[in-house]
Length: 218
Image 1 (cartoon, rainbow, N blue to C red):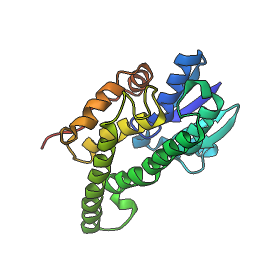
Image 2: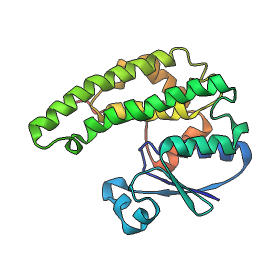
Image 3: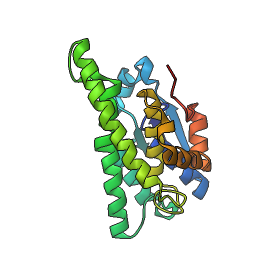
């Protein structure tokens, strides 16, 4: 039995949706346990014993913990290659992993600078400057993803749902939290509306209790 520790609305949504896709395709179930990040459950002794970094996602396989989203997703794809969460052809897989890695090491940290500027500097003035600069970069990243979505058929890698689609959904949700109106990215928004209808995505969203629209007009 696989067990996933996830934070509702966090990047752990990506392997969460993937596990739902695996369950639908193979019938193999998994256990999902929410880690309430806003309550600091990732810093409890019990969780730190599993993952000393205090991060989500965490996948436990036969009692062995595996952290980091790229490693978890690579493992899931290699264990269940028939599900098609990444392309099987070497070059196409490498291209997909390039996009996936960019999302993880560039887009994701940019949002972290918006959401938690206190991690990078002290003082309210410095926090405001970090957040402002990061919002500009995050908008640029959203524009790039929107360009990708214009060729989605219906998903970014063709006719099969992938990790990249789930991550793209996470980022559009986070745009609202970053005070960026998703309406400014119509092709992206329309694509995510399609992605959200995929059974695996819908199941993961239902378990996490999250909605697509997080933007609040001032």
